Length: 371
Image 1 (cartoon, rainbow, N blue to C red):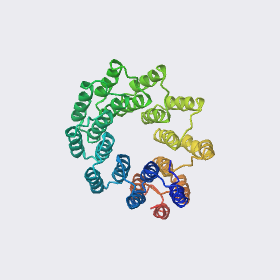
Image 2 (image 1 turned 90 degrees about the horizontal axis):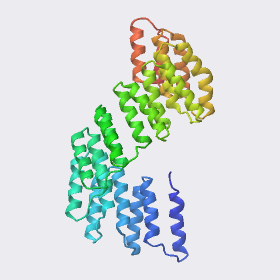
Image 3 (image 1 turned 180 degrees about the vertical axis):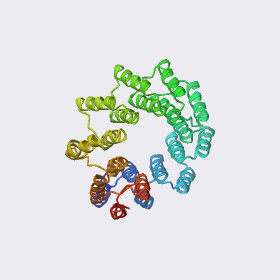
Image 4 (image 1 turned 60 degrees about the vertical axis):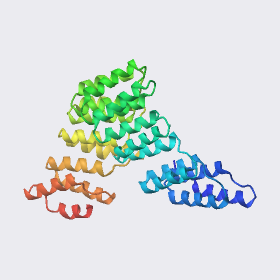
């Protein structure tokens, strides 16, 4: 949620006009709000103004600023602020270092992040669960799973540092690397660590099993999570729906869709598009068109979830693959009028069909408008 930073700044001005001098806590609140809304220049200006007013910054001030500049990738500015705070005898705390480690890891700069962790230890600041989890996530993002597991094992050796989020990070890394058995092993170890898997844990694992084609195991895990009292969210359903549709298990997908409606879950554009794509891939174009142009389209718009470019491209490709160029032309026209364009896969398909004289060259003007 974006804060009303303009109003906050005006309020600061009024406080000063009325002789009610804001203190560092007040300024820190406004600076932090600016940084969270990526208004870093405004935050830095306010920080400079404070110096002119004789209001000394503290570690909270610098932590907010360092977080802000890291969020927009200004590493030199982050280093400058870190050096500046040390020069003013304001010593970085675990929050300061965690901000740096997390930001560096998200940018794939794990070597630099590890150096920051070593600097923490040298300064007598003990890394915590957030520090190590960020480092582990950085290794996972780079696919360096052995390094990630080493960090996980280090956390285990230190006692009660592991939490559900830590496990989810490692499980997700293994799943993305299609090492599903290793991911499932961590899942089973959670019980021995007295950790209860949450919806994220189950959704990640279900996605992992789907990625490697083990749909039955994914379905079993889906049932297991509900039996354990964990409620699937829209993302969980989307993962399983996509797998079922991709494997032409449409009857199961429709049953799952009904289950979602029975549970009053708010269906989004992703869910609708998955169903349409499943019908298209199964060659059930009449059903896809009926769903898209009648019930589904109306329902989507009623829910404020109008079709997007992905939805249009999916069904246009389905129509073209089934040699229904006339319907495809009408939908391309509608897509263009709605402000969307043909994606690379659609363009490639149309170009191929044109070269084979399968589709009408009249498609070209419409296609050009969409690009």
